[in-house]
Image (tube, rainbow, N blue to C red; front, side, top):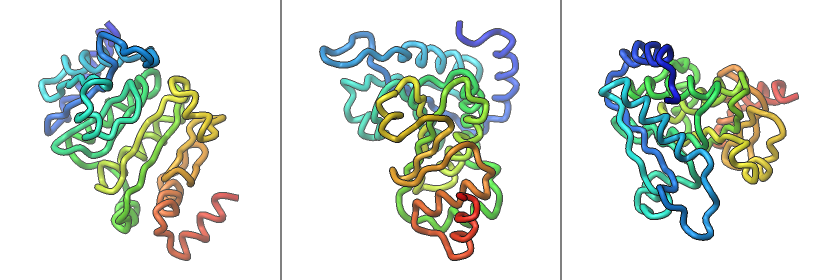
Length: 234
């Protein structure tokens, strides 16, 4: 059992807030590893973790997908690597986890499940107004490690944007599980956020300032915001 009895009681109470059903679509290598495919170290644990969560509320369910053989599902959810979790509510909001959500990121998953079930977040009105200006796809990747206490706030911000906007997809990426990806994006410390491949943000920033980087990546900064971002980035 991955979730202790004490934690189960807390989670059951948290899940009383759930409004609509939430499906955790888990992408794994399955029971047999295909020749030439790298081993998925945490696939089994990721499936078990989500299944234990589903036991704590009748509004949470798990769908397990074989990444190597169920190509239509992989394409539907645009999954690039495993293990992966898509947190799906009344629709697919683009909330993704790459790597097991362990350590500090476990609480992030719980809070995301609640937000996805409600289909809304606690983002400020200012942020929502800025987000409404985005009309082209934005892909956010937040690199984390399980022992980073500052990472959950960065992941939560990105996932909230995905829930609130049809144009945003946001991924938590566990840097230690995907070292080649971390190296590609120059991840030497976490959290490190990569937006549309070229815009980078270091650390966990307040919502107001983090949103400026998202607007920059989307090409939607106005003059006043550009000046503020310039001051923040110094």
